[in-house]
Length: 351
Image (cartoon, rainbow, N blue to C red; front, side, top):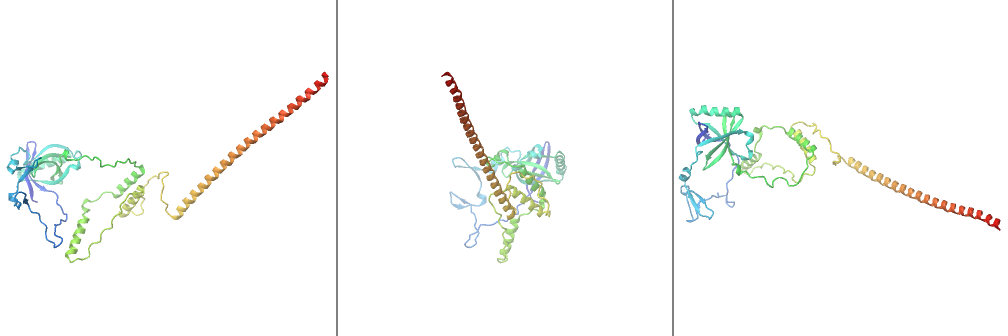
């Protein structure tokens, strides 16, 4: 592999001559811009705004645009004269646990190759020290005109370096999380765990770019004279998930079937009381409706019985009041008659 940078790793007082090699490559299908009328290529030309003429790459330099719009020329000599110790050195500044590096910071990946026979011993020393410590090295280096941050780690028997963004280049996730308060139930978490366990692990080498494959097949069909194009995959239905539990259960079932575990239990989840479930058949639905109607009738009967009992109680109270009144009147009349009888003989005796 062709190196893109030559320098050294500064490891305390140890200097390790190395070559920097790209660790990744893009396999994406690239397209050209064309004129749709005749298929001609569309090209960009570099034109000077003042002279309004095209210029060659040899005549193009760097410039910094000031706040007022003026351009300040910057030459390669100006940049080379800067006091940048990392211009040709990967300077290790610390050894830290890998978990302390935020994956959001990671950029391009490179392999560090020992440059020459004398570099083999210190290179191996650093590699084995990283392995035994189970740590990664944080380093500073300069590439393509600016100083960068990097992380060194061991991949097989090679030291790899990941370019890192500076901490102040990571944006805070403000306003990204859902603003609505949501409560996740234990049963939903249980099903999510079951789905994760069912999907299990994956061989990363088995993953491939289906879209790129489809594009290549489409291009091949066009080259052969407009042959049959690959069928488009059916678009998955979007929209809001109405029943999250049903979606999770279906996902677990589909994952088990994909792994050849048909008929296996989906998950042992305790059903939540009061949760409505869709009817599995018309009969079940009818049964639910019938049960609901019966419940309504029973409730109506109970209400009517209560009203009847209340009426009877009121009637009894009224009857009791009437009886008491009648008894009182009868008692009063009897007492009056008795008093009259007692008073009559006394009058005759006095005469």
